[in-house]
Amino acid sequence: MKTKLFVAAVLTLILASCTSTATHEDRQKMQDEECASRITKFNYEGHSYLLYRYGKEGVGIAHDANCQCYRIPDSDY
Image (cartoon, rainbow, N blue to C red; front, side, top):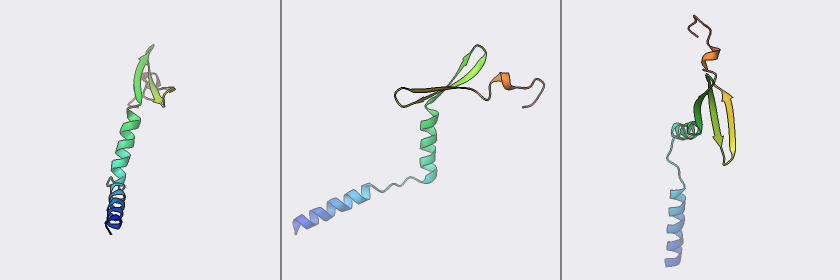
């Protein structure tokens, strides 16, 4: 009897601890923060670039879409 009770208690504890209480918005916010932490903005020769780090050796670089070279003079864009 004690063994069955112990097994039932352990199973209840395992099932209860596996239940996530985070909402979809919470999980999305955590994912966004993790992704943002892997992006570094830097300037080189007057241009703005984004450095993406992923994994242990993965790196990517992109010309920032908000770089000043894309701006039209005398424009609000």
